[in-house]
Structure formats: structure tokens, C-alpha cells
Amino acid sequence: MTKSRENIIGATLLGGVFYLISTAPSFAYLDPGSGSMLLTAILGVFAATSYTLKGYFHRATKLFRKDRPEINGQAGQQED
Image (cartoon, rainbow, N blue to C red):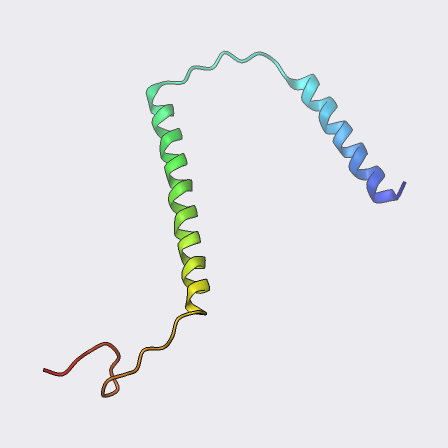
């Protein structure tokens, strides 16, 4: 076994022992405000993920788009 693998295994075992020693029953109360906060956090993660994926999607599709011809030096505007 390599030295780094021994360190990882030792740290994992030590962490597991501390986890088992320090656990005690906890009598927690979740009020409606806690549920609201949890729901807000979940919706925030969903919104951030969708916004990030949208940006990556637009970057990926940008590679496959054709450039539209410009009309009198201004793209997308027509003369009246």
C-alpha cells in the first residue's frame, strides 16, 4: 500500500470513530418557517441549475447557428 492510500484510510477510520462517539439523540422541532426555508433553498438550487444549463445550452447551439446577413450594417433592422 502506498503512503497516501494509508493516510486516506486512516483519516476515514478516524472520522468514522469520531462520528460514532459523538452521536446523541436530538429532539429537534421543525416549525413551518423551517419548511418554508427548505422549500426556498430547493427552489433556489433549481433556478440556479436551470439558469446555468441554459447558458451552456446557448453556448453549444451558438456553434451550429448560421450568421444572418446584415442589412445596411445593422443586423435584424429593416428600412421603412
